[in-house]
Image 1 (cartoon, helix red, strand yellow):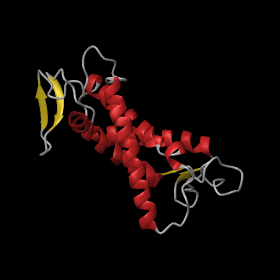
Image 2 (cartoon, rainbow, N blue to C red):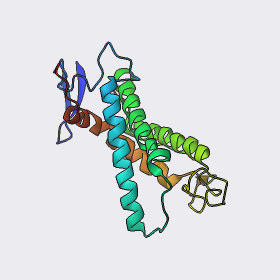
Image 3 (cartoon, rainbow, N blue to C red):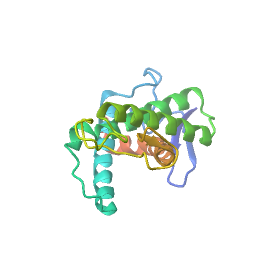
Image 4 (cartoon, rainbow, N blue to C red):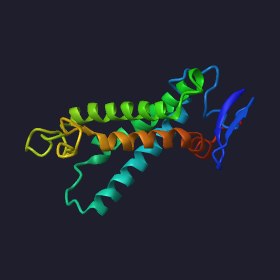
Length: 185
C-alpha cells in the first residue's frame, strides 16, 4: 500500500494506485528526484512564491532598501529549498513512513537553515552585509536577533523554516497534481 498524501481534512490517504502518479515516489525513481518536469515545476513555484513573499514582507516591514538584482542572486534559494524538501519527504515516505512529525519538523529546520547559512556565506550575509565592498549583494543580517550564528541564521528563522518545510512537504503533491500535465495519468 502506497502513502499518497492527505485530503483537505487532514486524513491520510493510502492506495495501491497513486492519483498523483508522476508526482510522488515511483519504484523506478530515486528518492532524490521526481521527474525532470516535477523538479522544474517545484523549483519555479517556490522561487516565485519566495520572491513575491519577500517583496510583500519588505513592503509591509517599512524597510527602505533596494534588493540588488534579487531574482538572480537571491530568489533561487527558495526553489532549492522547495526541491530539497520534496526530496527529503520522498526519502521519509520511502524509508521511514512512521517518522514522528516533530522529528520531521527538526529535520526541515536543520536542512533549510543549512541552505540559508551556506547561501549567506557565499553572498556575504550577516553582520558584514552592510559593510561596503564585503558582500556580493545587499543581504540579510540577523546578528541582532537572539540565538544567531554569525548573523546569517537564527532561531526565529529556524522555526519559520521548520514550519515552512512541513507545509511544503504536505502541499507538494497538490502543487504537482495541479501544475504538471501528465498524459500517463
